[in-house]
Structure formats: structure tokens, C-alpha cells
Image (cartoon, rainbow, N blue to C red; front, top):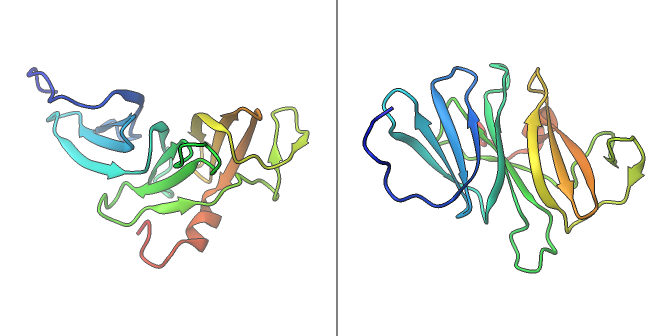
Length: 165
């Protein structure tokens, strides 16, 4: 990367390396995700999500070439669910795929212990991670507290035509 200091950037809330080790993504409190070339130090893309982006993760699978970004509730009161979206790592300009809330696996939000919890719309996102195959995205939430899982194929099937292309 370049040895010159980076331009003034918003506070970083999370970082993730791409599976190719060619890019580094940074999530910011201003609601953006920047994708950086590790070779040149140049921002390849600035992706807009909403409010503070709490966590990001690259899918490790080339079959599911996405960067996930999960943000806190877009309204001030926190009454809306967190916002999640998938950005295509093949085409940074493609429309992102929005992830529907609640996070589901078999239509239920689940605790790590396996006990079912009611869906919560006032949770704060703690972290996110893809499964090794890239088929699932798990997200840890607090205030309830619980975790949830999105099935990536379901999100893609429900996305508007052209999203995530």
C-alpha cells in the first residue's frame, strides 16, 4: 500500500480482507463501506448502506461472490430492524441485494442454545460472518440478545432483477 497518509476518513467500525487477498473493505460510522486495493492503496469502491455500518464480511466462496454489510436501525429511535445488504464483488456498480429482516433459519430467529425467540426490531448488530461455503450469513444481535442467519440463495431469489448481478 502507499506510504502517504490516507485522506481524512470517517471512523472505521469494521474491517474485512477479501478471499483473494487483493482488497480490504472498511466499514464506517457514516454508513459507507470502502473497498481498497491492497496493491495500490486506492479506494476501488465507496458503497452506501445507511447509518453506521456495524459489520462487514466477504464470502469465502467464489460461487457466492459477495461482500455483506450490516448496519444499525436506520431510524433514530431504533424501532426499525437492522439493515443488511450484499454487494457483488464481481461488479461493485451492481445494485445491492437487500436482506429482509428478521434473520431467519427455518422461519425462526434462534439463540445459540437453540431456543426460539420472538423477532426483535430493536437489536444492535454485533458481528457477521459467512459460512465456509458462502451459502449462509450469520449475524449476532444484542438487546434481545439473539443471532440469526440469512440464506444467501433466498435473498438472491427475492431480489429485484439485476440486483447483485
